[in-house]
Length: 133
Image (cartoon, rainbow, N blue to C red):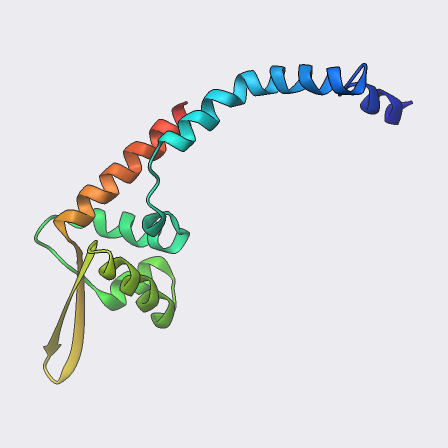
């Protein structure tokens, strides 16, 4: 009986039921889908690891930088994985790397560019708009 109830829910007849179902669920989902297509979600930022990097660097005050090992520690990422994602963000112009030396040891410091800050703020704004729709 349960199988029959599930089979009959979508349609009586089959085509009419599906149309009714899509009208019912589509009425609630259609605006969200339309809104999602209109909202610009930056694919460079949207990847989970890059989103975490951007959010962490956005918390660093303008003019300050974060030492690579500290960022790696905060995000619990391997150096290679972090470097790969930083290269993608740097290629987009969102992150700048400052390579220097601390004594004889190389040191890399990271910060968001002004373009990166604007892109992250836009990403957060657009994501909130999508979620609120």
